[in-house]
Length: 376
Image (cartoon, rainbow, N blue to C red; front, side, top):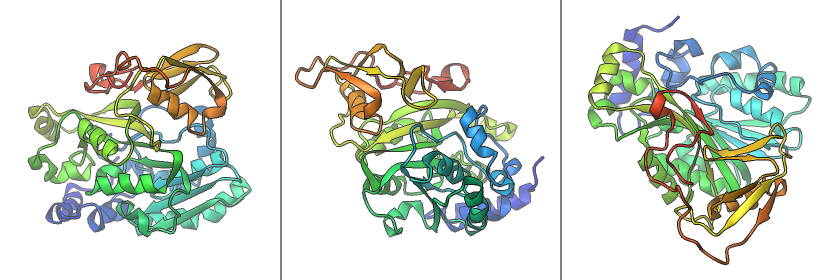
């Protein structure tokens, strides 16, 4: 089922290795624009979504042009709840699959902006705009060519975006700090980055970073999970929240031997990063709680904030100060009742830890709402 040869693949990836100062621009653009022609061309599951999407996403997918679907290379579902009327920015939008999903969820009063550096992918996205406008009954999408490390160069006003999504793209960027800092500037207060990407259980050594095939398969660019957490905090997102994760399998005996020799494990993980200045670096206990009203569409029984907070409707649910703010200072506010305040501090919230956060590491399964060893 693969439509590229090792020779073709290694030729492109050799250019990446030879151009280590900027491996994710011209050479990665060539790889994803010319060498990979369809989803089936991928050689590992690093860029393959685990599991079937939920029913409402499947309904959206039925309205999307087949050519857009065929050029999808994402590694997880990065569409959060409660998007109606929002302005959404998709980083590394490719041919526009997630843009056109989000366009249906934000509705006619919202807007979705796609950004990508790959001419071939954007050509598909823009040439199918009229098709999607007719399908949806309104026009609410726009696309821009550019580098996601240089968001300030795009015609997007700072503080104008509600939600930024990204699907297995930041992994390919040499300057991940610039991406996160740019996101922080574009978001409105209370906005969030909701994205999927690839992470490692430890730092990937330089020898593997220069491996042609591992780089081409989006593996060797993976951040060590704790380096990502610290980078997010330094960029203004003080409490990164893991939503779900799954183990990535290399499915290549030669590559597996290289990875296993170093006890490296890779994960596809979805995170949400809120722009809330008052967030603290750890989960602090102020004796607070929330009660979910059951009013977010498609979340009538419970609301999943992250893998530690699946909040059942009508139940008093104790939360740390950061979780309180993520619900009270964001678009979710009207869907909760809030108990308590910040007048008295009771110390660190029980269960706030710093171990490997990926629950899928224990059994190799996909994790969503299972908990894992992160905050509260």
